[in-house]
Image (cartoon, rainbow, N blue to C red; front, side):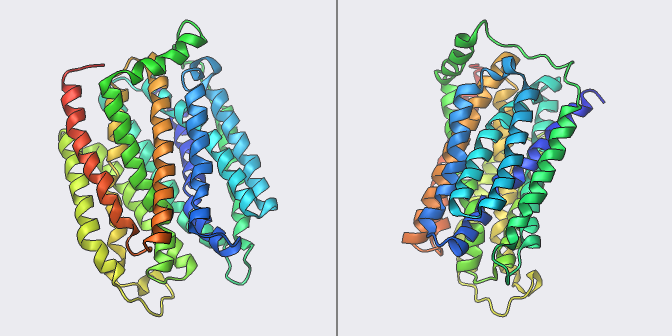
Length: 406
């Protein structure tokens, strides 16, 4: 298959960072227990992860074609390998901040490279949609694995045992580095502007378009919803359902698994159904789950839980919201990126990463504030607001794209 080595490298890199990035919810839970911080203080970890992503993406997105996607990804993998080792020896809340700051910087290099290369190794929009959805699906599988990986290293009798997972993650990052290092990228050529100034200005020229404005707002709203739930679901399971710590973390994997399934299935459905109807139905179903299912989960009385099988079925219902919010992100990205010339895709990817990071930070901070001040029972109800705004943005985006503005 054409470019198979490059595609495998993209899958592997995204898989590694899925575990690292979305372990933030687990580390938030561990930080409250091990390092004595409260919900609002713990939520700052999301900012340490997302703000470097936004800042680095802003400055390097349009330059990466010149730097080289392979060099950028190798740099990111090397940095997180060292950061994982530093987290093991540091064992503090400050070490966790440093870890996620490094992961954020590295992921900016990885994501801009991966998204730009998708457009380079695919021939048409259908191929673009399929590869984008499958890569994002693998990303969610990595997230799901994190919810089982961390408990596998965690022992209730030893509060520091969970840190051993970072030796495994360092090894996984190093393996990905080596595979990428020996993968040939000679057949990949990326187009850049006439000079660095032109490259940088491309991003600002894109911002001036109405399509870009509506698109980045949509991305911002979605990530606010997704990261708010993903980062705080382990804490919700512990404080509302009163589940043991390891089971709380493993329960959160249901959300990640449903996100993975939703994205993979969406790649099939969108070949036959217009994207606007797929996304609209998904958001409406997600809102119905929050409005009707969440109250039953909050009111659930759970006793004597020793394994996942001891939890009543209704306890598994809320994480299934992932099935319906899953298709939103990859479809929005693919619709816009595949409509752009390849020399502008890196700049647009930079905007995607920036507003994704800002949405993730704000979503987690707001949810953390709500957990502390409104109570963990009520916090997730507020996702109905960005969901409603997101639904409106789809129809605006559809109207604009029908005019072929870009």
